[in-house]
Image 1: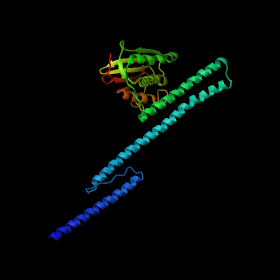
Image 2: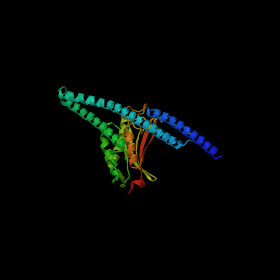
Image 3: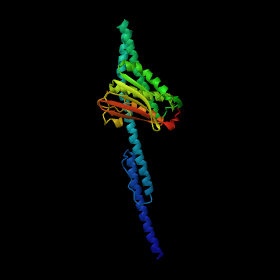
Image 4: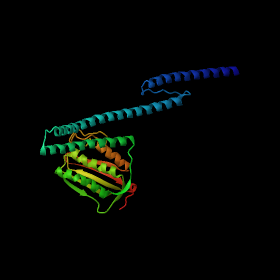
Amino acid sequence: MISAVLAIAVILLLAWIAKVRAQVKRAIAVLDDISNGNLDRRIVCDNSGISKICYKVNEIVIRLKEESASHKQSERAYRQLMTSLSHDLRTPMASLIGYLGAVNDGVVQGGEKEEYLQRSLSKALDLKEYVDTLFEWLKLESGERIFNFFPVDICELTREIVADWIPQIEGAGMEYEICMFEEEVRVSLDSSAYRRILNNMIQNVFTHSNAGKMKVELFSSGQMIGLSVTDNGAGIPERDLPFIFDRLYKCDTARSKRGNGLGLSIASELAKAHGGRISAESELGSWSKFTLWLPFAKQGLET
């Protein structure tokens, strides 16, 4: 009787071992395929003793596939960025070389020479802006952007930033309106980051909207303080609105094709670093409004 039971036990054990070996063999075959780059393979698990291992391996492969897809997307974004920037840099660089070459060779004299020098300066400033934008984006992408938050009168800082734009605004024949709080409003800000956010919002009007009027306004709404930049320009197609803060995204209709597709993305990331966000509203062919929202409580607002 005992020998019969032992025989049955041995048979069952051998069957289980054979089943596990078969499972291991299948798993090794799948792992070989995965190691050759096929991340779509999965190990089919049964109730054998290695089922937990199979499930764990499958989880790892799924995570590797997601990371690989993210890496490929980043590579495509970097290639697109380099292509876009090289194209955007080529035109002002060629113009700058042409203007300076004409001045250096004595082709232009007097007033025309001064005009060429002014144009050269303008192109050089364009190049500087492209380079500054690229470095800002790279620092944000790498997590190396260092923020220094201090209590700042947001009204005074906003007036100072907008004042730097007034010559360009008036030179473009654009009407403008600036609405601020009467009293001082101190908010914890990284001044350089806030400056870039507002500069990018205003630059966006010049680059894309073809507007004749712009309004910059500070206001409060519940527990938030808002900074809005509104224009009466070309507007943004409704289908583009959900994507305009994505890096390198460019609207393909209604608005100008100029720009590198990084300005609004950078502004959005800087807003998040302040515990805030940027929103956009628009009516195609009529107006656009970009609003930076900062939380009162988190920023330690003092008035």
